Image (cartoon, rainbow, N blue to C red; front, side):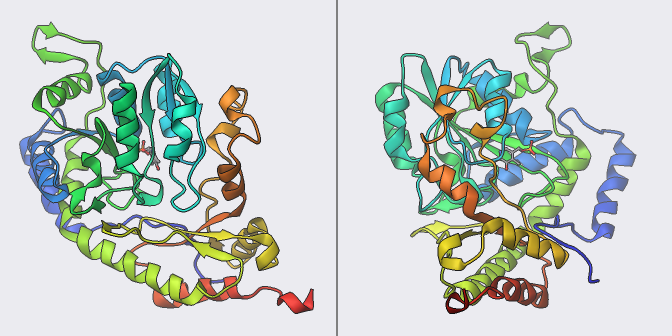
Length: 375
Ligand SMILES: *Cc1c(COP(=O)(O)O)cnc(C)c1O
């Protein structure tokens, strides 16, 4: 049997290069608490991403929790059922009621047309996700938020380096949250960040992530411990050296998949958006069982028997998990697009080191389907 292929494999720079950073950490004995690598990474990320203020976090989920605290969000927040569960959990941990609304069939992001009818007097914010790194309709979402006096926090965990018309996707909304988890396009083992627009907000967020401490004797707000450490920050600095090459390799794999699988009836893709710089974080395909002749789960199992571990991101919907399924907005039939897509989606392996032959094998497995006239 060949080596297993997983849906992703974290990118790591050459070990010798990381050792140099480790030696500096050993010399200085500064391990955390806003050390020199932390400071340097914040500055380099602002430059690389094209954002004004960034606060680094030990992971994306703590960044989401803190973003909600920073804006004092309460009551109800409109969010997507079609994502990783972290953002909805962050609402719950803040005692906020998630209100799910349906997604757009083209981008699989929160559908702006569905937001307004979900707004109630308790609604204080919208929490959309740039799913797979494909930007939300930020223009319309931000316009609705402004009209109703709502805050917008974008979960940009998938969207590192993505740009809309030359502007970082992380510049939209009131705050954007990134994740640098091992499985993401840019990783610091674990890590995350909040991007904001002004110095005071950054200061407030930096206090919140360090217990609310501002000096030896003064604590000004009930903060948490969510600081990134020097090892994480050092890896981030190194990863920046390789990020453009890594995204380029992802793009090539995406193009190979699209060329090889584009003509198969019943298989469809999410396409690039005009004037967007994508990061090719994931390669989801949608499998229409009637047209393709097999269900998504049959294809998923077939991959497994070939030692290839695709993932059904995002199945089930967040709204279908036991702690959320009793909410009114989560009831079956209310989000027909998300309910259909969650049954059809399969994310194929994609990561910078995925070899051309592996990509060919993956495509061949999709091609092995019963021909329609033999059924
Ligand atoms: C990974 C992820 C998160 C959480 O980030 P962590 O760094 O793993 O805590 C949040 N939202 C989405 C959409 C994610 O994919």
